[in-house]
Length: 115
Length: 115
Image 1 (cartoon, rainbow over the protein chains, first blue to last red):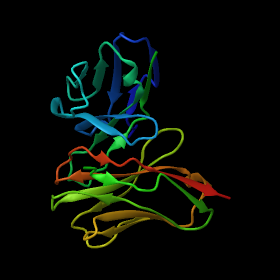
Image 2: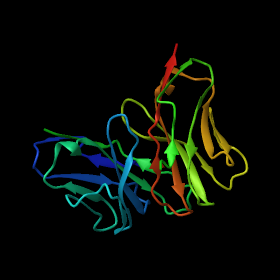
Image 3: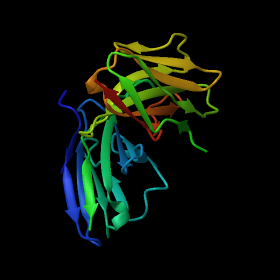
């Protein structure tokens, strides 16, 4: 169990640029979640996958955001035409396929700064 | 309406003392799960403890226990024998239903342990 891995750890970009983040979940976990966390707040749900199927998207996920999990393993989160309001920590988590008591295991996050 | 409410933005506790962090939740589901996570200044989200809505006994994990009062819809975290390393943000979260749906997080409580 190597844990959830996210890359990059930090990303600084200029407003209007596109950025892409990667998440590698724990290998036996079939569910993968993306959250966003701003300073002083709890994580806010963005979207999640079961295997390669995207099951739910939050209203927070505007048209500029897209997430994929093409082979049911790693996932990418892309933000197009970044805005300063996109500056946040983007957290990825995964969970096992068992019943509702399975906790989410989080990666260390990608901190995005839009200048 | 907020699904998870944490009313204490910050708490202080003396080392070796016990502390209770409050969490109330709102759901109409009969089946749900409650989770507590710790987030140190380094940023990673660490799972601490889980309580299922049908669990009759309060959950315990080492120095952590969950004071579950179903009728009052509260799920307070109790940390016994506080240590300096317990200083962190603590988040309460809820999953509604029995499947691995996303967690909804509260805004957190910052705990500071004083020597």
